Length: 585
Image (tube, rainbow, N blue to C red; front, side, top):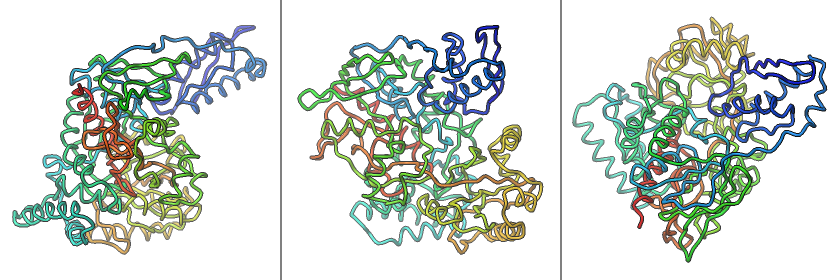
């Protein structure tokens, strides 16, 4: 970012953010408050904004540089007192429903509860709403007969269906799900249709298979039978979707719907926040839930620390909904539970692209009331973690993944755990997503692409050879790899790695590359819930007054979450939790 600072002879008169490439929403609280605080207190010792630490530090470092240029004393300004923040914080009160967590799950739960007649307070421990939903690409998986009408059914996709139907039964629930899909598949083949086959049951079967058959079949069915309704509900509440239905990385099928005009979960968060405030949901930021209030086995509220550091209690007559996210940002917690499941090497050394608020708070609070935990050992790595902060698209239909030797090494449409393991085995644990101009401009404006190139966030070459030189891979190898990729697209059949989803060739210059390395992305384990989003205790009984939704819950995704399933999971069960809590007596 670029910062301009105006000085008088003995004071900082004005701090202006002239230009920046920070992520809107996440960075906004820091950009809006840090400059004013520096001027007000004449100090560089102001606190960073929680959830926007890097942006805060960038502003403070830039101002410090300006102070140095102006001949001022940086260390004296850092030592100057910055005053104490005083805001209108949440006070002890009573409400129908208390929602803990302001990400997608929390906002959808709050809106749903309010729309069903409840009075609602939502608290978020960070300085901004959004959680991981804000940081995601906005992809939402659901079957959608209307939206998928133009997607073709290919021979390789038919093979995928046949293979899953041929899998041996692992449980009665799995057998029943297979029977439902088999009936639909037989009807599809008899109909003579050539467009994409899909259904809630097929989505459920793929989800179960991708999680190595350890997901709760009933919960998966609840998810996939309600996603289309959730999509329409989001539309009614202000979210706009692209007409194209494709496959986000790890999604396995052409059922990923994309937010528009920007491919970002920020679109979802903004719409839900606006709708929630319009429905009279009270929202308090910088407010952290510390523990649940347990009255004779029933959760009746929570003890919180408000924005001024005061301890307050909110009594919730109808219940508390936990929507605090997972624990990817809690290194100690993910290291502990990793040993029970994936056993990723050096997981304590890997970064995370999660919100800093994803520290397992809701899981810890749930344990305090004997909540049962499921699937805690299953931790997902995101293969598409940008090395330089840039990105074009999380969709794989027309993208090749190549290593630093310029060669493909994996089926790009595979499971995320397979993609992550493949990437970790490459030189420097790094690979490049390669696409051409038609794919790059499909979901991103040219000005945004140009900006990322200018900032060094992505690479662009007029030819593949030029691109290879920029990213440092052998040009002849990259050209041969992409030529072979194009032949595979035209053939439309599984390749040596098992890829089955093909769309467009990579032939239209200029060509783009984004460097990626895996990071901790999603924790599949958490609080066990039922189909009504009620939390269960260690005896399998409902904990009265306690609900949960989103990544704080476990048991739905098994060992591996399907890409594009997290947003519908959070928002669908958030919607269910809100409605269930609002109906409580």
